[in-house]
Amino acid sequence: MTEEGKPARVVVADDQTVVREGIVMLLGLLPGIEVVGAAGDGHEAVRLVAELAPDAVLMDLRMPRCDGVEATRRIRTEHPGTQVVVLTTYADDESLFPALRAGARGYLTKDAGGDEIVRAVQSVLSGNAGLSPSIQRRLLERLSEPDPVPAAVAQAPDGLTARETEVLVLIAEGLTNQEIARRLHVSTATVKTHINNLFAKTGLKDRAQAVRYAYTKGLARPPSE
Image (cartoon, rainbow, N blue to C red; front, side):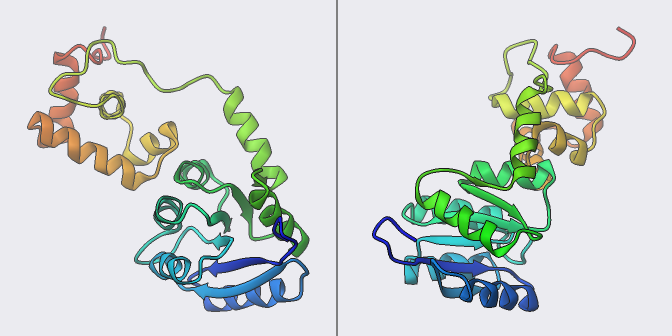
């Protein structure tokens, strides 16, 4: 229910038709929620939010054309009156943290029951977080971990941002894009964007040149040192 005592108006976004229809059917049996639309990808979810102004979106993450993270970012930027609760199969850091940074206030895995989904929606509409117990535990574990991001040992050259410098240092350490994404708790696509940007700013053409550049600029040390 909303603060006015009306059912929460919800859009469901999931690219799998059977899953999407199952969620819609489940929510239709529960009190306090009214499903007003269903989307098969992120673009459609954003369009339905603009058209219907729902209270919340139940958002899958892995969808074609526009994934759940980008759709969440657009919804929260363009339609701040609509909250987003992620409902996904994935609970790994690479899925969780980008979604939360994009503006999702709730995060559930698809083994959640109907009552748990309703509670999460009600929580985010009340201004609280709607997180499953397993996600809460992961956040607490992450907060208790030491910061793994290496500090730049010199002022960033060539106009590199702090995050681009961090990525460069991790390249010099020999990490792959996937390993950098896990270390920084961002998506692999985000890492690729940072790499493209730092290559453009520095004139570098490949990772070998990036490693030499990091050594030359004092941002990293060769293994023998």
